[in-house]
Image (cartoon, rainbow, N blue to C red):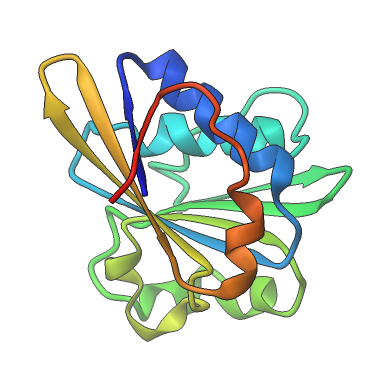
Length: 157
């Protein structure tokens, strides 16, 4: 299934709707080229999950952790990682011990050091001004997170 978004606000709103339905543990891979809206989508998910205050991009820190009423949330941006083993130096094993919401941009750069995803969200540019989101369920429980058709135009497929 998939959606098209006419602007970043619609992408953020879709993410917020998803965040409102999530239960932990939850692992979501955010996939797509540079500039397709992965961070905007993640910020919406975190807002919907109940993360208060400013939600920063982890582009330079690689990992941002947040507390919410629903439990801990982690946002990883692995674009600058050269090797998945670098996650060991960031203390990835410490994070794996606790149930949390994981939002991981550029998961392919994490090698074998990341938890398996429940959901894969693939973003792309569909046409000038429109972004496309493809939703791939990796676990059965992830289906319960998607009973909503929030902002954006839904398409089956």
